[in-house]
Image (tube, rainbow, N blue to C red):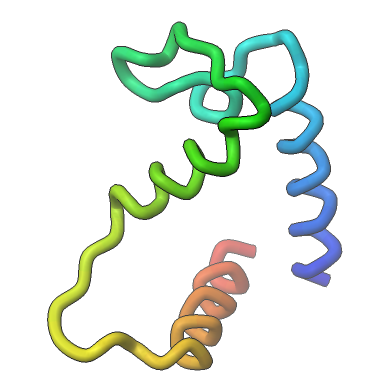
Length: 79
């Protein structure tokens, strides 16, 4: 059920990303760069860098299966 919802949301965001209508943080930059439209060919790089800018770690990396479980539980808890 969550998987279907994620697919629908991903498709919706993909539509927004290629549209000419600016939508903050989806096809524009953030903060001071909010008025700058992100080219679709640079969008994946931009999105990945934005996510990585919020990441940090200390110590041994958490195993991938544990991370996936934590992310799934986070999604489920939000309904």
